[in-house]
Structure formats: structure tokens, C-alpha cells
Length: 71
Image (cartoon, rainbow, N blue to C red; front, side, top):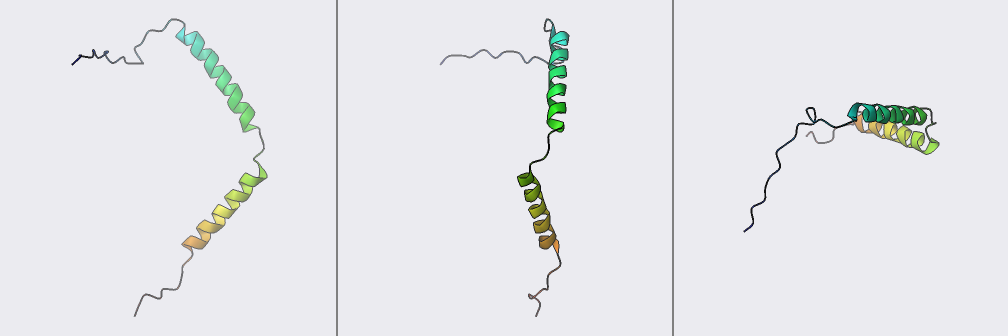
């Protein structure tokens, strides 16, 4: 039976990566640009119709119904 050596756990907060702040800044900037572009997109009509149907289904499911189980 072979013994496998376990690597020690590395705390990401304490890891020292060269250039991480510069790279992280660029990644953050690109993610923000992507988020902003998506935020400006219109919601598709199909999706709005689906949300409307779900709202109607929730309302009808939570509406009080006559109870027939009482004797």
C-alpha cells in the first residue's frame, strides 16, 4: 500500500502570489465592465411572461380555498 503525502492547507488570504494585486485589479475591472454591459440589456419578453405566470400561480396557490375535509 502506498502512502500518499498530503499537502499542507494554504490559507488563500496569506498566500503570496507575485503580481496578484495588479492581476486582481485587471480582473475586477473586466468583471465590472461585463456586469455593466449585461445590466443594460433588456429582459427578454419570454422571461417576463414566465415571471408573470409564476406570480399568477403563486397567487392562486395561496388563495384561501373552501375546506371540505371537516365533518
